[in-house]
Length: 184
Image (cartoon, rainbow, N blue to C red; front, side, top):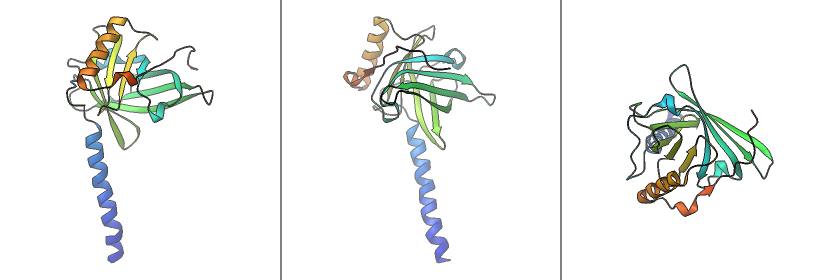
């Protein structure tokens, strides 16, 4: 019986910790608001990463793209691809995204390592779904995405101003190079 307690208590605490971690990791930063009347079908397809912070999982990457496609079960397949210019290889990660609550609100959660989910919040997007400002659960994660490898200066300024008002240090953004096509 004592052995059972030695196993059951740590496993239970770990499960509770994982639940707490998962519930906290799909939030949205204070001051940020996800896009309402969001149309996930219009969001599907290829996006080019124009800017981001220097994340461990994207270290030394340029030519980064994100491809979103609908899965039969209603979730979204996320296929991120980038060129590691240090290792001189293309790298790819495939994950899954789904709505946090209401599909018409641009609050998603994404996982590349289930059961760990992270927040993915579209907080600004143009009417044609060509440019998007995306943030994670906190002020450590921000992406500027475009359907092409560049964005107009007016959109760039709009996104930077919005991010600064929320509290992001946009001076730390990496502006991603796009000088080669990803291997299909």
